[in-house]
Amino acid sequence: MKIRLVFIVLAACLGLSTVIWSEEKFEARLLVQSGPKAGVATKFEISIESYTSAEEISLLKEAFSREGYESFMSVFNGMNKGIFRPIGGRGVKIVIHAAHSIPTDKGRKILLFTPRQSWDTEVQQRIDARFPFMVIELDIYDKGDGKGRIYEQASIRLTPEGTVGMESYFSPPLTLWGVKALKK
Image (cartoon, rainbow, N blue to C red; front, side, top):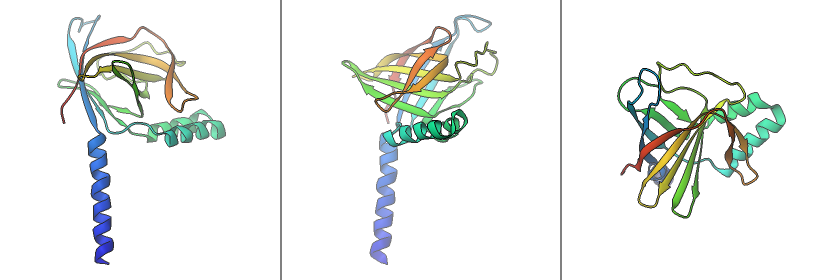
């Protein structure tokens, strides 16, 4: 009994350390281009707890092929991979439901997917129902700094490589600057 309890505690600790070890945090700034807040920079924190697995992509494909879009969205919304939120001031915390880290020549590209929504409580967007997702794209260089873009209204697809990808978007992306990895 004692040995089994020690094994369970050890396994739980190892599992917990894996979750903590894999978490990444980034910060970025977005300069508002128009409206009453034109010229004001909003600072964001992006916390990624884990990346989307091949098994999760299989679940999404199966849900869509068996029961359609509503089932796909139910599975998608059940996958919580992290948070995108403004720092300070007013704003909304956005849950990230799919995340991928793809190696590049100079570092990696991180793609984050969530249902379309606004983080700014004071902004009203023109909505196009053909683009029900928001995609955040971060280009992180080897030293931890980088750049990024936010596609506020996008359509997505499940790729043959077993990832989620952006298919198209409604309006030009918003540019993130000062992107950098935060130390643990």
